[in-house]
Image (cartoon, rainbow, N blue to C red; front, side):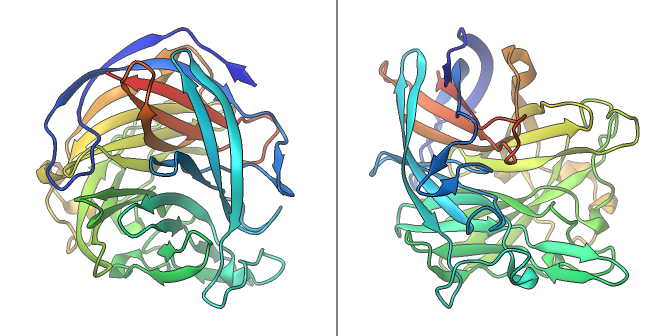
Length: 377
């Protein structure tokens, strides 16, 4: 189903989206909202239910979009999809899936679900194409369940695979990113989400969705103290180079009932050039179907390495990445669902750069797999 929304101009400033070795400094004046596309409910492709799309990336050489599903091998083995999206001056005309590929462990087998091998169930969240090596990199959030009679501890990971899904290698995990049975390290379902290549695919940034236990409390309504980390990796050595501190906005809406579930975190990052990242913050509160999404611009040159800072609670905020609001999706005048991914797409018919976001439907009949198309001016 396609739904075209009247164009809305959203003023913003950012830099060129090229990923060349030499960073461009050409400014962009704004984002023009073109429209949305809603994937029909209960869409099946090659005997899999399409859902849980938690990332989007575009490969211009193939003219294909890549989506990873966060299905934890429940409805089908963990997987990613490729698709062709047909754009026009009026919006997204159609989406046609091209293939589905199952993710595979080192031994070549697909990943199990919780009924098969609970210690190796994946939680895929981010996926990017390394166009230099033709390999894919994906994030696994891991698991942290600590109960009196039941404990599962699985570290998050940044994984390298071939396009056929075969796992090749993983990036080194910083010491403070290991999952523990005590309240230290990453929180459950709040670890590695976003990925962004920079420096001609020699650098990789990874975003942590929510604060580490040591770094303080999770985001809340009227609370502007929650801080997370971005990890900068050397792609060749797979070793971390730095960590940067980033301050989250408060949760936007009071949950219903008050005191029930609320969250604001970073589900995705996207490289604008070798220094700057587009950072998506998604706020959700119990009692509402939709989300509140903000997109910010940060310059990593403004941040200090906090790899050796045990707790960001004690770190001056002047050391944090400075962010500037580019887009408030509340102002688009439509329902905004669970936005989890962003990518620069091809040129539009008028020659302008396209930018697309995707929302994860959580395999729910009420939520939607939603694509949002913008024109970069």
